[in-house]
Image 1: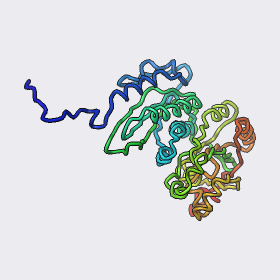
Image 2: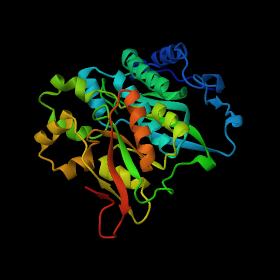
Image 3: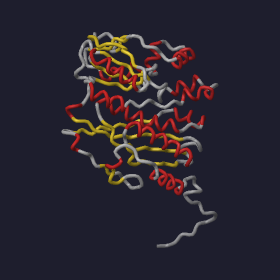
Image 4: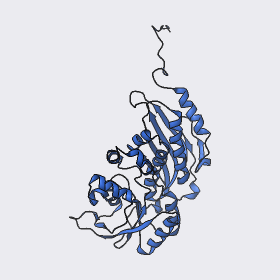
Length: 338
């Protein structure tokens, strides 16, 4: 093979903006972190080309694998501007596992994707610390991920992230709303704040004073895995909805059955959402179509089980309210009646 000599200065991968050594240091740092969740089930994970996970089939008669993926949207822009990265790691896990548990599944393992213009170990480690905390709350384990350094695509301090989670549920224990009956009630479980939805709007509303409201804006998404696990052992859950982009009005109908609707009743909106309404001038309906308005998760149960949901939520220090009941749905009416 003919050896070609370079003309002028040598341009290598590092001088092009990609630091492979920094990526290797990050992988070593991740390997050194305390394990979470079903770590003992990993047979090959972080650092390899793929991950191996041993599924304990003794716990499930007819297991169905459940998969979810999500990101945290433009909240990452505020995270960079405020140098407050760690909460978005919790957000990343929450957005995946909160979706997953709506069908009754138990989270098993999680993978992350982190992309930046310039790999900064402090930023990446902060994100991973948040991910580890979220996984701890979810009884889930990290099996791997991908770090991409892409100069020219992202500005130096910018980053983006995505999460991927896999869980399992017994086929005869799937929760899909098919058993919802007229008269069943919806219990709304309080959110921790804005979670990670609506930030294109929020960034615009708070663009002049976002630093003064950093604690409110960067509060991480609440994770509902523990509550749902407890409730599944005590009562029959008929349906569940994770309130994300699209708000209450956009997410509740995803689990409603044909010819049924949710007739809502009032719940107290936190001051943070009242302030957004004041700044934006949005109507109540528009707010409910955009943000969670204080409700991060909705659990549908029979009237006799409503008290249990509220009591178990309060044990965690969370608020919960009966936010409405299932009624017959007329074709001309919306599926959520305000």
